[in-house]
Image (cartoon, rainbow, N blue to C red; front, side, top):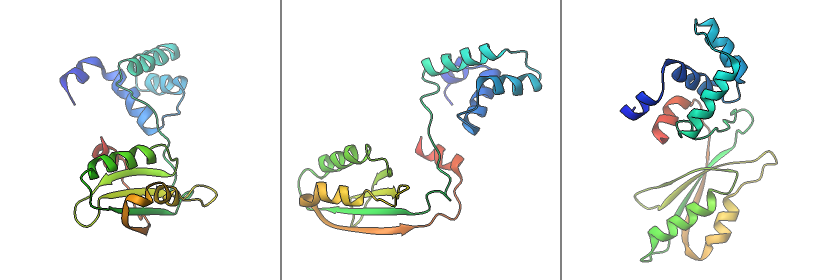
Length: 165
């Protein structure tokens, strides 16, 4: 962590951040109760104020939904190989910008070797996939693609978050 981050938060802020990382939906009242049980003298409204301050300072940049694997069990990797052009990087950016608005797309990554781009996707609750939308939109630029089913046996979300940051 940077020095600026460490000076911007105190021990109570750090504990609030820990509790929010465990459950982003925890009410300020519950956080205050936990802090009081740990020996801190703090009111519910003070916790809410601290959270607002952390958001304004961009220490808390947002909240995200983590989907239980048993709800969405079908993940797929879409590998794209683009036709040889001078603007492969520009095309990669266009595809990434397109997929970031698709709700089923979890991540994109540029890759080396035979493929240009990896897109990790999940079926939605109706079993729909977004691969077809991507392929249809960029078909004139795609030389080849592969769709591989993925089954995650175990995910350490804390390690994944630190890798993605």
